[in-house]
Image (tube, rainbow, N blue to C red):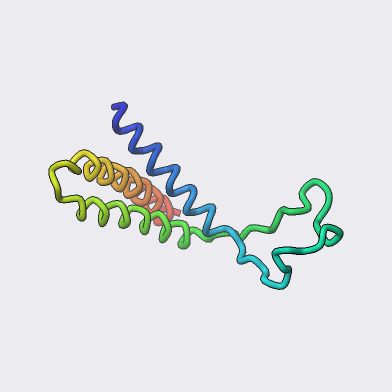
Length: 110
């Protein structure tokens, strides 16, 4: 059970990071990297930027891509020395695919 929990935690952390990255807005290139000190933002939250809102379809695509990435990496680990790592990647992909199965079933019932 503990091994399954580690796979789930690893898969979910990686996927949450991918979702967080997808919500990031592109950096505006109009501000030079070496801006003058007086042009720097000041105050709490001055460096915060609005985030994109992902739709359900985008979230599902990202989760599906994360699962596929793990399965592809596991397929490339053919040496016996890498069997444990390949199995862990397959377990992580299974966790993500179970979430997709649950999410798609809920969306269809709505």
